[in-house]
Length: 379
Ligand SMILES: *Cc1c(COP(=O)(O)O)cnc(C)c1O
Image (cartoon, rainbow, N blue to C red; front, top):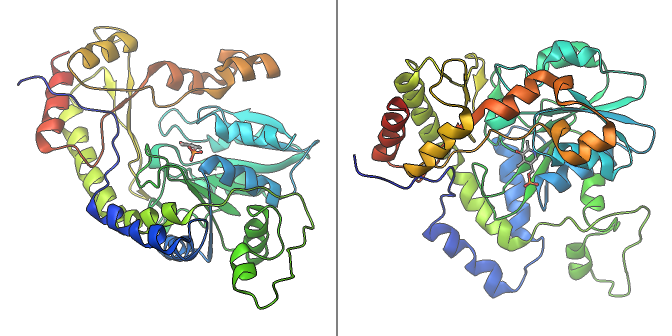
């Protein structure tokens, strides 16, 4: 086989997204307006949840959901130690304390058993990450969390499901990302979903500077002298209608994207299972995987070379790989600030050191997948 170049991830965008941009560009309504409204409605419908509130990223979605729960100094929020850094950062934005908990090495998600020991009387929320598109085990988490608020970090998990229910309504709120590394994209962008009417209204106000009437209402209203009143500290986390227009098109393709990815994930499962040095993603039939990434673990006791060397060899062959994500407690800022050691969360550390995401995206061809499989088999 001749050498190919295969990126770890590539967004799938085309003519339809290009055409969808024409409407807001010609109407001149560029900030949150009809396109965002439509995106919110369709997104909520797809995830079988009452409300969806569009924002600028999953990071701002997570921040706003903590603000919506009035989390602040003196409060503790539990987050898994293996996740994207912003899952933890948002807790610090609120002046609250980050409490890490270790992951289950098989799923990369919160280990519900270890979680129990982290809960104190100060615990105000648990951020349950659905990493790489696989839902956290929400029922097991609920068995230990009592009435503590659960926030789904569903940044990687648009369209995924748990025991037949789409993610997005499994906790108090859920936060999604439309960064180009995720399954559907708006460039940057995020969404908060919830079944709670009051929270939804409050989140809508908080993302718009805390204004008690929206720009759209003000623009359309008959009373030009009315400026909004501000009852609380808000933010500008509004999604633009340009992003909304692209999001509407991308959302229509979500299930097709996931089905394609699931098909190729099965192909990887089948073709790579004989490699004893490579552990493949593990999950049971009760999960509808969103397949944002296909993340393996390199078993260095059996592999020809350490993980980093394998990643380097693959890159030489034109195949991009990445560690799954990072162990946040090992990042300098957190290690110093909280005085924690890498070994304090050993499963997160192992995932940090030995995980390897291999290419899985909707621009890959059959030949690309075969090339990845053959290259891995020949290592
Ligand atoms: C990507 C990601 C985020 C951040 O999403 P942005 O939209 O880029 O802010 C947060 N949490 C997890 C688990 C992610 O994978």
